[in-house]
Amino acid sequence: MNFALGMATMAICLILQCLLLVAALRYYSGHWQEIPSLFLGGLRLVTGVMLVLIVGNIVQVSIWAVLFYLLGEFDTLQLALYHSGVNFATLGYGDIVMSEQHRILGPLEAIHGALMIGVSTAALSRAFGETLRVKTSPDAAHRD
Image (cartoon, rainbow, N blue to C red):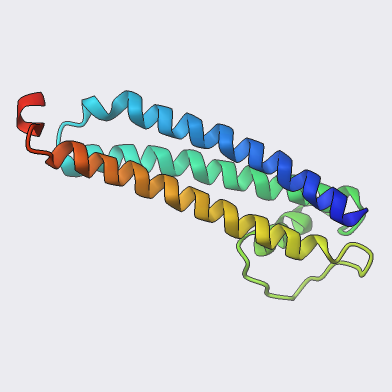
């Protein structure tokens, strides 16, 4: 049952991450022409993409925390959020652990978090790389 709950939560979070990733990349692709300079424009666009993805990761941490809270693992949502953040970021402090009944959910969230942080990193790299490519290409001077 825990595995099914974990996989369902991962699927919900993956859908959310994909939606936010598409939104972030659409934002980037819709604004790259407005880049006034390589540094400032690139910084602005990459920062915008990064903020969207960070919000997505925080929402995912919150979804896992709500699951832990609803399962009765934690007395407060604040504690569930802390534990979820530690799992998602794969810190593994171990200062707070879940009961044996639901313990498998922690590693599942850690696997999910590592993958989603990787997806966020790939999206940022793509946005930054495209910004550099567009602004440093031989015909960039003709577009400005």
